Image (tube, rainbow, N blue to C red; front, side):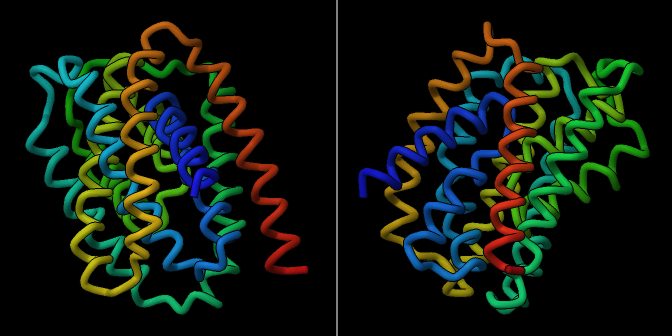
Length: 242
């Protein structure tokens, strides 16, 4: 019990800072013997309170931003992705886990090495709709490294300042995670005892992470998440393909 709480507390902090909290809770749930699809569903539902608390601490960053468009994208994409996961058998999904972790980690690493810059005006460009919708669908489907993926996408779009991008990341993650609650609940994939325990850690960690975000060096943390994601993908390649 305390092990799950500890991992979710760390995951809540990481989600608020750079994204990738599921990198910590997914192994804990898989280690407890929960099937991969149910583990993803349980972690996704549990992460919602942490996203709410983290976004609440940064909500002022999105004043005057395209909130309606972001709301449609987050809820719609998250719901579609969650429904797609319910169509997968856990044994088949196992083989996707290391590829998803590795892909997101390498994408973010590529963005960190970019010399084109990350920032721009806080505006919803036409090309941002399909890009962010795809990110939200991924969030509902898997969610591991969702914040990492969204930060990479917004960096490519140059959508807002660094802190505004973090606020958008948290808002979309909160909406996508919220949309999964209904879909996964109806599907019966959620292990509610573990989900409620994880939710406490996510909530406390998200609140702490939102405060730390104002003074920590995000790029240094991001490289740490990339390294951890690559290492974790290697572990699951050996576990599921070995």
